[in-house]
Image 1: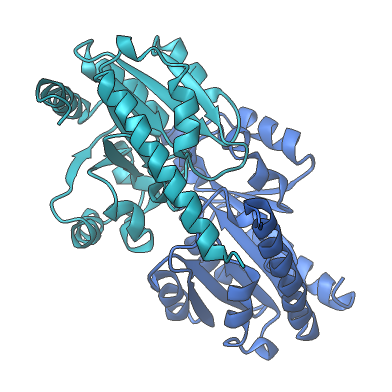
Image 2: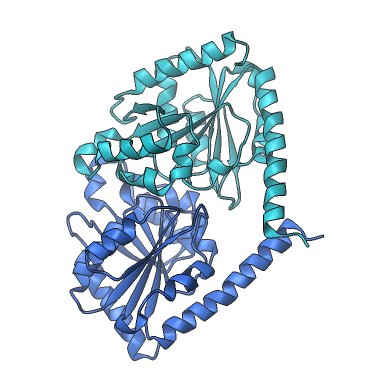
Amino acid sequence: MTSRIDVAEKILSANDELAIKNMKILNDANVFGINIMASPGAGKTTFILKTLESLGGRVKFGVIEGDLASSIDSDKAKAAGIPAVQINTGGECHLDSVMLSGALKSMDLSKLDLLIVENVGNLVCPINFKIGTHMNILVASIPEGDDKPYKYPGSYRGVEVLVISKIDLLPYVPFDMEYFKKGVGILNPGLITFEVSAKSGEGMALWGNWLVNKVNSWKENGNK
Amino acid sequence: MTSRIDVAEKILSANDELAIKNMKILNDANVFGINIMASPGAGKTTFILKTLESLGGRVKFGVIEGDLASSIDSDKAKAAGIPAVQINTGGECHLDSVMLSGALKSMDLSKLDLLIVENVGNLVCPINFKIGTHMNILVASIPEGDDKPYKYPGSYRGVEVLVISKIDLLPYVPFDMEYFKKGVGILNPGLITFEVSAKSGEGMALWGNWLVNKVNSWKENGNK
């Protein structure tokens, strides 16, 4: 008899195998891939659009937008002049490597240095599914509250970069930054962290410069 | 061979059967059950704690708090004098009827008129799993943005009440209420909606009065 756990393991394993193939496609095209995760409404899309300005043409990037439904996010990216492909998961709570594999076929990777994949807004499921990108980024917004690392440890453990967004709202909501960062530090010591407001622009230049360096050094070192 | 879909259907069916048993336990105890769903950080817990004040002792209620990890929410509820049980899902992205069944055994239902179950913060998965409560409520916070009904249609379709929270933040974030409500109206026409700020207290009395009437009329009409 096939148990629930057996089936889950088989699905995960097939997903991981295809994720490796996706990464090879990105490596062969010399494109650095980022998987951005967050709660619904943490400001992922606005952050990505403002990243375009921060990069100032130094890095050419495209986006793949994941959502249950709608093309709202890819429409916004296209309107800003960013090559964009929309994935609608049709109810699935996360992207997986099959979905990314399909979307990669619609992207002209030869024109890009960087591919930003915006995962489905969900602080639980996406972190459990590799898609084949090189880096995981978590966007955590101030109005979500300072207790989120304690409640969603998996997402905070599984990322290489944390972006604290909507810091312009700090005066208007209860948020203890020390308590928040203490939780992050327990789960993921030394995590690279940026504090930004896409609205006011605060922190975006620092983030943009870091990202340019990251992508360029990865390319110069032969995808490493 | 057991397919992925077969297994998923069996899990759902077993879940629904136990949900019916959970509802019978609530009915026999004459306790009205509410399942509150939302994104992480939409303000579910604060809303529940402020609901206690709005009820002003007219309805006795307890809470069951669902989270991946931590007892932060049930600790807050207990500190406010509300009978509370914590469920830690250990990674699962939603509550199910097995978890609620276990938690119900730790609750003295004879002392309650109302049981509020706070689901895991997740705008995708919880709506797909019945747990045995009488009513689904969605809390949508202003800083999440006005496009959420279009992106997460399932959660907006599957609820009987919508609470728009954190309306005190309206001056500080871009949020087009007309666009938001248009999306809600398409998915769930006539949905009962409250606009509240747990912080300033705005809208909480109206909500509290409505809830008292709802619970009392349900009890007076023999659980109907």
